[in-house]
Length: 242
Length: 279
Image (cartoon, rainbow over the protein chains, first blue to last red):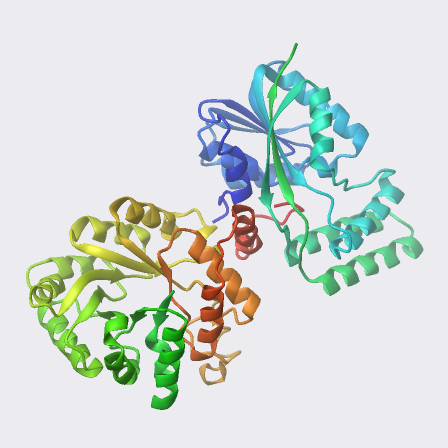
């Protein structure tokens, strides 16, 4: 079964109006929120991602069963092909932590543009990991590699209040905060995926620099194994244009 | 918590007696046994008779027809050395046809009802590892069904397909006032293949590999108990019973964020979805 809806998604959508609404999953990943939106009866879901592999994964996972309601859109979230004022509910489930602050600001602008005047917004993300969390070392390594290659960090863990402030500045009135996961289970598979992010960037660096980064990432992932650390929170907003 | 008396099967009589005393000391008053659990009925007997008033006794049969069910009930009463069983269950229901036999003419249900009229059993229940739909069907077809026992743990709770939809069973039972007993709450996974680990080399006498540290046991107990089950049955191996008793004694519930964390942690086990960074 690949379509199991994560309980984080189900909890985040439980008090939002989804049935019969046009929805947008911003940063679809493998389509976790998309699966939840479809399950909750969305009339249409735009799953937007800039990653071709993720787009293919969402199509594979959900496309066949929901071809009448699902559109997987490969696009940059700073400039989507969606019409202005066209979406009733936007989700950003685990999205913001892969956006650095300038990008976050531009994505927030775009999400506000496509949202209808009375639209809802769901933002689920990770609080900064607690001090001493072993996973932080792997995340730091990931950011170091990303800085070297892309000139910006890969991961930014925003405190909930900070994200609430960003979206408030883009016309969203804060409605509620809930805890989706506490602790967050960073499984072996998650850590491997994070180590792979380092590996991808290391490959773009001269071996003298890339090889040690890669080795450090593998060592870290192996020595941590898995860890329970931190919190995933869920924020909900309503569009509140003056 | 319910004491799964299969644990007694692997103990000598003196150890079995001590186990029953230990369980009673922790305030557990619901015991569950079956004729298929080796010598468990016989080993439970002495202490059961000594404390009969304090124990709500569950038993079961795998017999689906009238004669077989009647015979096995008499055998259990005899082996246990008691006059009556408080809760008698259809054991391990797996197929629709079995339900047809149980509820049909000359079926086990007739024997159960007759025994109920004679005061040999007090309540009728059902246990199943099978399809949740089959359990719902049984609830529809057996008016006087009062309990159901089924597997429930974070792996099961994280799956959405009909095959694992025990949530629907929980909801239905709550609506109809039917008691729910959770088994396999402590399952970690299937044992490695017998090539890798011969049956004789398994460290626990369970059908599956159990979690076995105090923290994990406590976490699994708290999870199962906080999801709406009326009671959670210990894993069958006697080595694990004391840990479960301790967990049950210290139970304070589990908040939803932690429940989700447990489900999420195990959700990826056999998922064909490519791994990503997020939950």
